[in-house]
Amino acid sequence: MKALVIMIVRRLHKVHELLSVLAQDTSEMQTLHALLTENWRYPSRRTWEQRLKAIPDTLPAQIGCFGRVLVALIQPWAHCGRAAAIDSTVLRANGGVWHNKHREQGIVLSPFDGDASQHYTASKMFMSCFSFGPLGVIEGDALIARAEAKLLGRADKLIVLADSSKFETRGSMAVCPLSRVHTLITDDEAPEAVLDQVRQAGVNVIVVSAERADISFAA
Image (cartoon, rainbow, N blue to C red; front, side, top):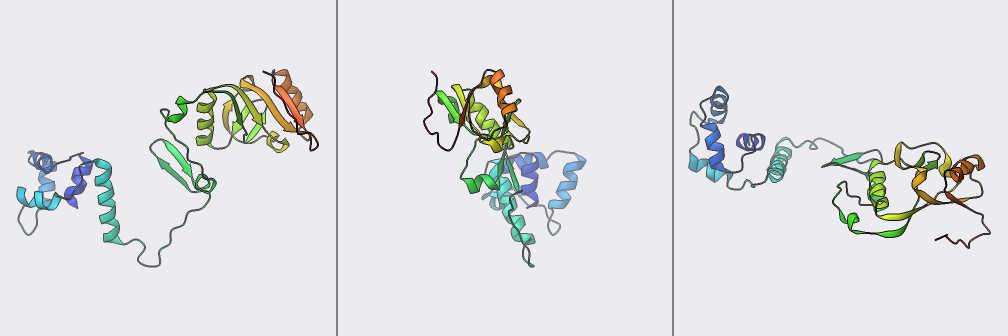
């Protein structure tokens, strides 16, 4: 395990690379020599090759291998240990954020720019939001806001569907300003003062009541 830690820290992939580093005449390498010595004997090259032949070549695989050995060695949950995922649990991986709620909603969002969304195009994009108001479309989730912004760049017109509950001030992730919104569809309980501001920004506002279901969009 000591040799594996050295390989991970120094980004070494092969046994000969490890031996070359250990052969350096420095105080650091002398300390490692002492730590790697067993029963007053330092392992030979053949011994290292036999011990490390199962070590994978890539760094992520080496880290995974070390983690499995470490868990098996210390057994962190051996004595009534508990592990649980709750709604506020956040998993971070390579530039992205994935919440437990995404799994429950069946949502898989890419944190990267070069995903499949760049190959789509549309004349209209329909979307809801966390909140809507004079500042535009607001989301409360950074990853969802990023995904929506990428899709928005592939559409000509944005049509937002937001009921009256969406006009409360909340959220902190701005997806786009009102100038990017073509049409807003809401219900007849939406605050009229806010709707007036939205209209003044040039947004086509459609207010729908429970009895009205026939909606047409201007070209």
